[in-house]
Image 1 (cartoon, rainbow, N blue to C red):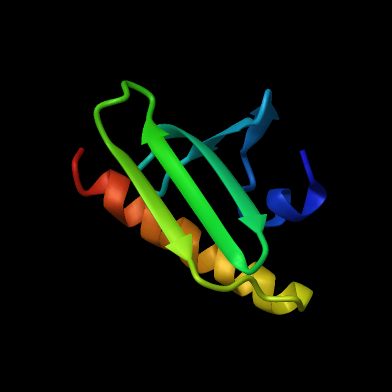
Image 2 (cartoon, rainbow, N blue to C red):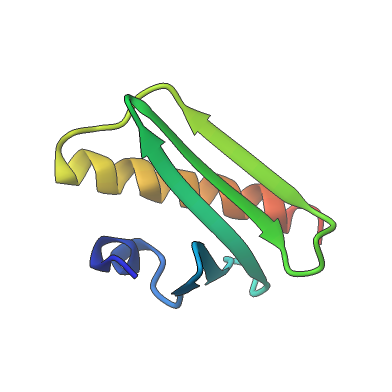
Length: 86
């Protein structure tokens, strides 16, 4: 796992392109993120597969602090969406 992800996703585990993350409401979700030519995306699904969320951003920051802030906002939005259906 890239160390920059561990700053934001503290309890995350990673393997085979998927990461496991504990949400703010205590459930575990599977997620993956990526970037390509100015587009960034984060997606996640509940462990039972019944709920999922996809966030696509039309830009990807080039500065580390801005990238960290963007990932943190994505994490909060993802958690909010997945925890709302608990």
